[in-house]
Amino acid sequence: MERLIQEAARRLADTRRVVVFTGSGVSRESGLQTFRDPQEGLWAKYDPMEMATMEGFLRDPKLVWEWYDYRFGMVETAQPNPAHHAIAALERFFATVTVVTQNIDGLHQRAGSTDVVELHGSIRCYRCLSGAHTGFTRADFADQAEMPPKCPQCGDLLRPEVVWFGEMLPEDALERAFYLAEQCHAMIVVGTTGEVQPAATLPHLASRAGALIIDVNPNRDLITPIADFYLQGPGGEVLPRLVSALRLAGRGKLG
Ligand code: BV8
Image 1 (cartoon, helix red, strand yellow):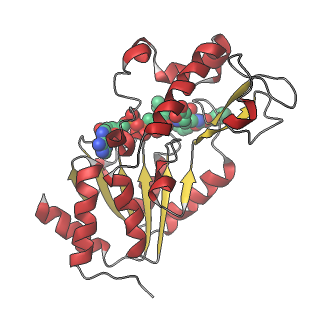
Image 2 (tube, helix red, strand yellow; image 1 turned 90 degrees about the horizontal axis):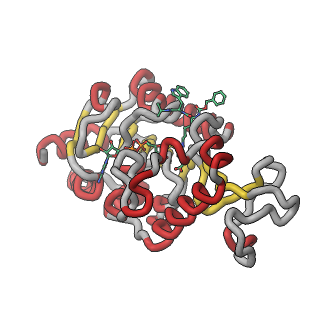
């Protein structure tokens, strides 16, 4: 594996524009569950694919709200892990590094990544069901005891400003992500099954546009077959070694 990491770093060192595409696996070592992990404790009997939908929310708003509340609590106590920090450190080696993430936990920003595209929204933001009033944070409804809280503007139910299954992704985020995938010289893919569309199209777009594809995952995923390098292992172990190899390859910040 060490030789593979050195070789990947050597190829990566020849590039300037890098995109890091991440899924829930990159936050696994921060203690956050992926969607495929059997949900722990109270949530073991619920299917995330069911709950992260408008139908699931309308069927039982309180239950779905409590699930997001629970996840918000986990995110609040979670710390960025060595994978997030290594990804942030990449900014020292390339002209541009953009993180395009499927995650809603904000850990890339907390690790210091300065250019993050959140394809599926953020667990920190809330809006009313109709979408008429957006941009609320938990402080805006902290005084409400009832679950789910109501929109301070119109009294409609509040929901997390995240993209549920069956919902469109934020247009500007998706448009920028497609542009970056087609323009980048390299895409490092970390912690995703490569199943969830349309996000999972991005590595295929980048590969077709001639970018170097590096896939980091303890398990083979749907991106592995198109990867130039498959670095098998947890992101928190592989990525710091990739950054050290880049340092050894003598990469400082490009002018
Ligand atoms: C839409 C926010 C269209 C919520 C999420 C084709 C085209 C378009 C749509 C579809 C299509 N085919 C199917 C669809 C529908 C659907 C879809 O993709 N379904 C899948 C299941 C087949 N897509 C949608 O519904 C999207 N909307 O397309 O609308 C439309 C068209 C017309 C009109 C209206 C709409 C919306 C998708 C967004 C859903 N929201 N998140 C929330 O988080 O609560 S996605 C959600 O699932 C998570 O964000 C997570 O990112 C994702 C699961 O994927 P992964 O990130 O890959 O995570 P997963 O758990 O699966 O795997 C973890 C990986 O990490 C594993 O590989 C594991 O091995 C690895 N790992 C584990 N430990 C580590 C590790 N890796 C590194 N280090 C470790 N330590």
